[in-house]
Every structure is written in structure tokens, then in C-alpha cells.
Amino acid sequence: MNKEEIAQHLMVMRVGTVRVDEPLKRHTSFRIGGPASVFVEPETLDGVVAVLDWVRDEKIPYFIIGQGTNILVSDRGVDAVVISTARGLKGVEVSPPRIRAGSGVLLTKLCHLAAKAQLTGLEFAISIPGTLGGALVMNAGAHGSAMVEVVESVLVWDAREGVRTISGDEAQFEYRQSRFMHYPWIALEAVLQLRPGNPDAIRQTMQHNMEYRKRTQPVGEPNAGSIFKNPLPDYAGRLIESVGAKGWREGDAEVSRLHANFIVNRGNATAKDVLTLMRRVRREVYRATGIILKPEVRWIGPGEGGAEATWENLWCEEGAGLREF
Ligand SMILES: Cc1cc2nc3c(=O)[nH]c(=O)nc-3n(C[C@H](O)[C@H](O)[C@H](O)COP(=O)(O)OP(=O)(O)OC[C@H]3O[C@@H](n4cnc5c(N)ncnc54)[C@H](O)[C@@H]3O)c2cc1C
Image 1 (cartoon, rainbow, N blue to C red):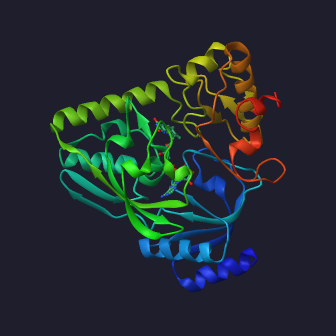
Image 2: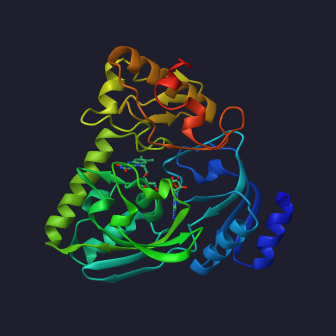
Image 3: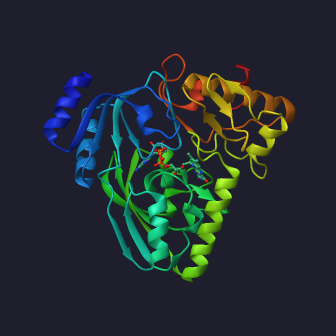
């Protein structure tokens, strides 16, 4: 089936908006990325499930996107059906001490709802951009806490077993990773378990976290958050700064002068610019410290030579990747 036929079928399904050759730079915080051959925004949870069932049955490659704040999309785009959670997975139900929310709900919105319901536990997430779904997959975290601490259960679409509920434990959250990265699972909604808290203390912590973010990160420029994972217990930002990389530039991609583990798009940066800069940073940190930085941002697109869309194919993990340096 070609992309027009796929789009036609999705339109007949009447699940929501369908577009062909949609530029993904419109849907990423980096403002980078070529077109998705088909882009669909289902209006309901059932619509999301119907699209997922259909693409699976037809063996059409698919990819799910939240707010696009943690991805670097290839300049060549993605030859797949890209499914956005932005519209269809928006439900929220607050029943203290729990919040049930759709994967397309913004994390910041959930923080404000929790504060309003005098629930504590989610203050760390106030300035993490993106959706609940993206935060689950990435086990997003800040200020010493992460999603793992608040997720009770997740309603998932499992390509093999259909829609079912998994526990937080089954999601196997670890530092910036989860089982979602290795299983054909899509998060549809989640139940967060919080605790009754003092409303003033909750608001003060949120305020403090927001101010800290504004001081330390280039929030006004297009970026995708931390580029590399921290090689714990060290910090990627410290290592990158130690090799003098702040301000290094490739095309319009620049290592942030405010926070060295951020790359900012100064105008018309391409994915190629960002990749080239990432390689340079990674190589120099390796030469200076022997530490190989691993990307936190997720690569979406073909690997070099048209292989699968993973960093492994771009860089061949670990030592093998060093051959490219
Ligand atoms: C300025 C800035 C600051 C940031 N600060 C932090 C921070 O402090 N801590 C932190 O952890 N992150 C941070 N990030 C990264 C990012 O905000 C988080 O990783 C966020 O949780 C991603 O959510 P998203 O909706 O944008 O996901 P996307 O970028 O759209 O997707 C990320 C990954 O999740 C997958 N995905 C998305 N939704 C679903 C779903 N429903 N089911 C299955 N898979 C899904 C996508 O396929 C992709 O692989 C920052 C980013 C920016 C731009």
C-alpha cells in the first residue's frame, strides 16, 4: 500500500485528522525533522487503538509521538504512519490520592491538577515538557525524582496481546528508560498514585523548580532537552563543559552556552548538523575522559545505509561506534 492509499484508508476509518507528508519539524521542540509519510491525530482512545490495530494487521511501520520534546527526527523524515497522542488521549480524572490521565495530557497540566487537589509527589515534573506518555517511556525525572515513584499502573496497547493493564513494576522503569523501549507497547493512559500534601509547600516547591529551570537551561531556544544521559554518578553537562564544548557549532546547531548537555537550534539546524555536533562532543569527551556518552534523545529515522531507526545503527553502540571517530 502506498502512502496515499494508507491515508485514504485512515480517512475512511474516520478516526481523526490524516495528513500526507506532514513535516515533523512542526511537531518537535527541536524544530527539526523531515516529513512523516502519513500523520494521524485520532480524536479518541478508541480511535488510537483502531489505528494501531490496523497498522499492525497490515504490517505498516508506525511510530507514536507525544509532544516531540525528546526526539531528533531525520532530515529525510519517516516512512511510517506517525500517530499523535495530542488529541485522543486527553482524559483526566482526579480521585485523590490518585490521578488517572490519558497519555496525551501534558505533564505540567498534571502537576497543576495535583497541586489543586493538594496532592504531593509530582512537583519534580513541573518544568519537564511533554506528555504523560513520553514521560512514562523515558521515565522522565528531575530534582532527584522520576515517574517510577508515582506510576501505579498503565493501560497499554500491546501489539501481541491487545489492550491491557500493566503495573508500574512491569514497566521496569530505570534511569531514562523503561520496558516501553523494548516491547511493542503503546501507553494509552496511566494511574498515578500521589499523597495528600500541604498546598503551600507543594506550590513553593513547584515555583522553586520552575525558577531553577529558567536559570540553568536554554528554555527559550528550540532544543530537545538533555542530549546525552548522565554517566552516573557523573554529569554529561560537566564532562562536555570540561572539554570546552560550550558554543561549538555545526551549521545552526550549537552546544548551549547555558547548559553544555543541551544542543540548541539557532535557526535552520538540520538533524545532520545535530548528529555531527553530537559526534564531535562524544569523541572529545571520550578522548579526554575515556567515557562514552550515550544519547538520551531518541533518534527517529533511518540509520546510515537505511537500516533500522536506532542509535545503534547510527553509531554501533559502545566501542564499535568509536571506529567512526
Ligand atoms: C527544554 C527541555 C527540558 C527537558 N527537561 C527534562 C527533564 O528535566 N527530565 C527529563 O526526563 N526529560 C526532560 N526533557 C525531555 C522530554 O521533555 C521528556 O523526555 C518527555 O517526557 C518527553 O515527552 P514527549 O511527549 O515530548 O515525548 P516524545 O518526544 O514525543 O517521545 C519520546 C519517546 O516516547 C515515545 N512515546 C511518546 N508517547 C508514547 C506513548 N503514549 N506510548 C509509547 N511511546 C510513546 C516516542 O515514540 C519516543 O520514543 C526536556 C526536554 C526539553 C525540550
